[in-house]
Image 1 (tube, one colour):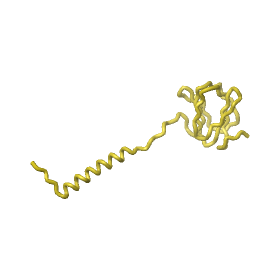
Image 2: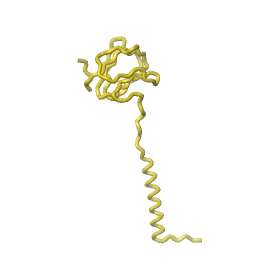
Image 3: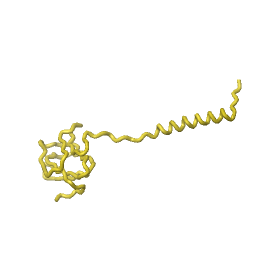
Image 4: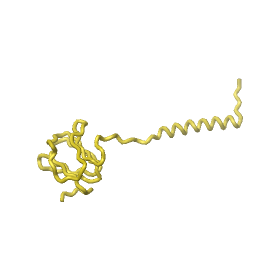
Length: 122
């Protein structure tokens, strides 16, 4: 048995092939997704062992945390303003807007949420 393709048959085969290849290309270009964080905007969260232990939503001057928080701890700033975290040795570190800082050493005890994007202590 011999298969004979006319002009319409060849066109149909080419169209089907292009459709299949085009579909494969479209499905291969999925957009990457960002992993979810346990802290929603506009919060500042302290995460220890994968759980949010403290969360703050409003601009505040320097304030002590309810309890000291030994490292390792993650500080998540979802706000559009900078924040400051203070440790038990008197050190302070600025956390930029919309960023995450991992603290591997020390013990955190204070927090300040600014109404500015700049890391300036005034």
